[in-house]
Length: 84
Ligand code: FES
Image (cartoon, rainbow, N blue to C red; front, side, top):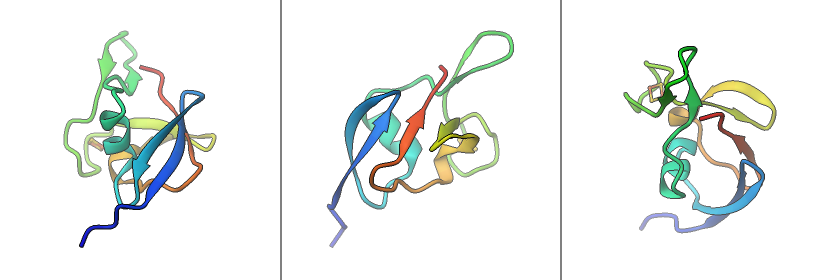
């Protein structure tokens, strides 16, 4: 049976709910965030590969910039910031 434990995380300063065992990228997408960062040419970027290769899903987590959200599991109380 899947772990249905709910976590609270902050995304861009607002509280959101997510499920234990999911990635930060999945939590962002499930909470309606599609633009994770902005490219140097001003384009919104979103996860592409979903397995840690393309670096398109980078966000800031607990003050650490450029974390690949597709391979980072959610933790209760974590703070996530997008710039997309
Ligand atoms: S989506 Fe490609 S590294 Fe995360």
